[in-house]
Length: 147
Image (cartoon, rainbow, N blue to C red; front, side):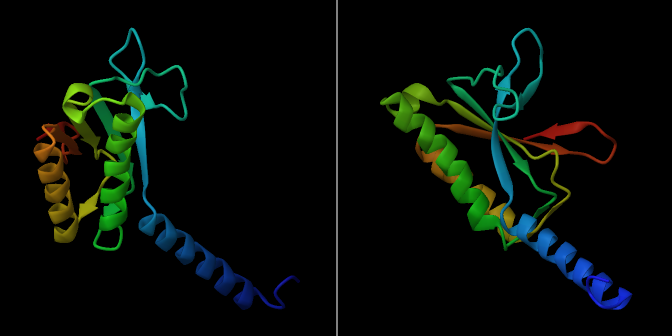
């Protein structure tokens, strides 16, 4: 036996599972979505290189189920990195390049108040740059809500 007994093995497996969940909650994935030409589908640019990154509209997906105070700052920084990266590569002003940012939060199940405050801060920061921010949230009956 690798761990000496079944109880020790189960304890190690349980500890590893909890550690994985905590790390995934802390370091939520934030990725850009691109448009598949000829369709109404937006998908991960990293996963589908043929997806077209739109110039004036950025669609960003938050790939975590829980938005809590633990990952609020991390998510805010990652979203602003996406916007700044587009501005840096364009060598133009933000207002000329990016007009809107859509946050796809369809994977999000729970949001606490600190993350709502973080989203409002992102909204204010983007508004000060002349960029609109919208987010897409799931609703219980399966339809989606746009704000």
